[in-house]
Image (cartoon, helix red, strand yellow):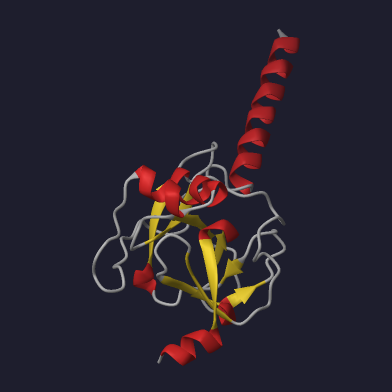
Length: 179
């Protein structure tokens, strides 16, 4: 009887420890941002068939943006670049993030403090891979860009952790020349 009680106490302790480990790692934590539908620049959504997206994008770009996959850490073109400009959606060209808000998060993916305009991105709850996260999408074409987490720098405390394969960098001088 005493042995059974000790085993029961031990199992309860292990259950509490496992639950704490999941919560502390964010596995069971709520999504950091509420779902939000952005508004595309110009007002119109870009809608294409799978065949059209496949013809336009490289296999990796398609896998990341249309199938909601993630590139391996430290392998993307922009994870450690310091080039000046605006990061646009690789699918539709909508401006998304300014290089001035990019920072080194130590994760191996390009990370930003905020989008160029709140309406340029949409957020959606992602419950895949036994986690609850907030997915970030292009508001014009619904391309999967990455995720946003509540552990970023001030002033907003957000870290938009994105896939390089979902982005193209438009140099600032090219933007200035178009004006």
